[in-house]
Image (cartoon, rainbow, N blue to C red; front, side):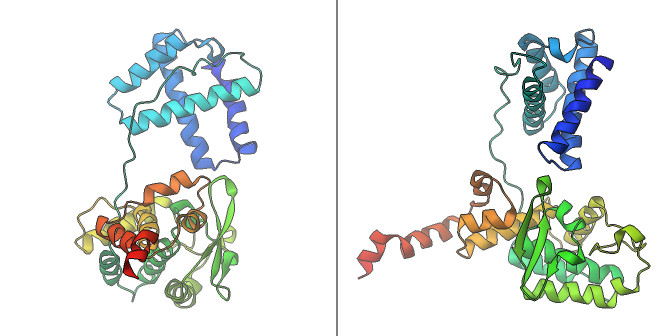
Amino acid sequence: MSAWNIYINGYKAYLRTERGLSENTIAAYLDDIQKLVIYTIDYSNGISPLKINPSILAGFVTWIHNQGIAATTQARIISGIKSFYKYLIIENEINDDPTTLIEAPKTGRKLPEFLSIDEIEKMLNCIDKSTMEGERNCAIIETLYGCGLRVSELVNLKISDLHFDEEYIMVTGKGNKQRLVPIGKTAIHQIRLWQQYQRSHLTIKKKDEDLLFLNRRGGKLSRVMVFQIVKQLCEKAGIRKNISPHSLRHSFATHLLMGGADLRSVQEMLGHESITTTEIYTHLDKSFLKQTILNYHPRNLNMKK
């Protein structure tokens, strides 16, 4: 392991400073590298990362496949390894990239579950808003769905990021990149209820005064807690889908597109660097697509005249 430490530490600093990645993303990249380290210890006598060759990497790819790891996870691991060796090239530690010929398994583009408007209403109706957690949880669901936020963006959302008079919030996304996201009156109303009647009665920890959503002890809300809140509400609402907080982000984008929003606008609101990432949200109902074509394609408009 010692042969790897200096390069892994340098790579970690590179991901943080040069690429501006979040701590969660950095941890995922480093976990990918650790898998390669384990493999080299078991099968290649702990060879230095500078001496890794395509043959060893091919064995590693076979090894992770034989572990029963899902194809999507295998692809992510291989992407992480490729990123590490790209860094070593940039730093002139190696001249040739041994990952060039390594291919990730074909994964397709699996769509996450999304909720209908009716299902989201059922979730909200299951919340007991007479409790502190109820008011907060209602505000959380309205914000996740109303603004299309990632869980990490939600738990880090600050009161100073709220610009309700202009109906915008400032969101800090991946790589600490900030974007303005519109927020509707329903979400604003629910957040204000949470702030005025529940949050204001908490004894808030000093470092967390500006955070919008807090736990009952006045501290930062964890990502795990948000997952639990969404899961429990789905169960209460009788929704039999594999739903997570990301499903609300997916529902946000899907419902916008079905309502006629253009892809570029949705891309901006979601904070995607590439529009190809946003295109996964265009799995609209075929009847909706058919009606859109009939109503708006110029050749069909000519026929109506």
